[in-house]
Length: 192
Image (cartoon, rainbow, N blue to C red):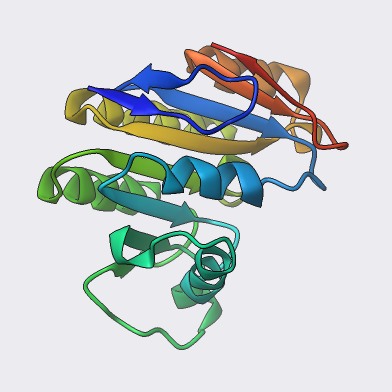
């Protein structure tokens, strides 16, 4: 199954099982790329947020006109920070951003329970590595990429280049078949 992409300078479509790494500066405006990715050619999508709460994700989706009826959100922050949580069928929580097994499990459930074209956005791998560590984040990303492949889904994974050593960025890049580079001025380059 192929998935359309609405990302400038990237191919028009990618096959199911593709994971895309979005490398961006820490001040980079990734919301546009993220929401275009989620809003195109999709039956269901899961936003895994290690950077913002479910409520902030919902506000972002609404602001960019993304169809929220297709959304599941995995909030990794609210429990640990003691924020109020509104449970629903489509908002999930893990105890903390370093509960990587929980993140992988909920992603597996999402992909197993939903049919059709499914997309995942992980915002962000950088935060995941900050809370866990680089090695555990690499393992979790590798597991998520395997899930995408086995369920014929696609994913977009955010990585803030400036925060990591060049060797760590290279380790993450090596896991992916497709990489998008977002410059500070908004220029997008793609390597597929």
